[in-house]
Image 1 (cartoon, rainbow, N blue to C red):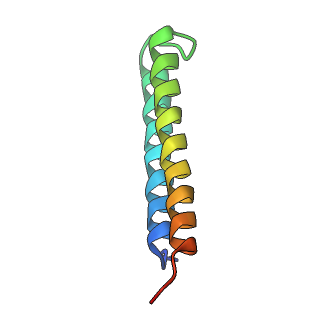
Image 2: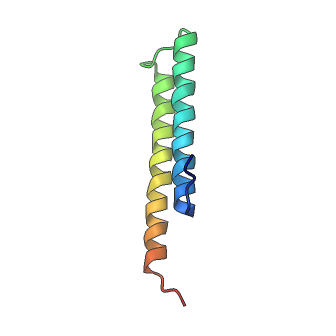
Length: 73
């Protein structure tokens, strides 16, 4: 098993884990209940979560760029 060696690596793995749990939960709910993927509630929840994950990864890129531009003393 390869563990991430940087803070950014840990954040990426955390974000991917959250995404995997969300997808698994939606798959479980759709397979075990009468809820369909095209229902407004599932679409709204999915859109909100995708927006959250997008902002999460964009923030990582921004903070990484800030760290790269700062001079180490």
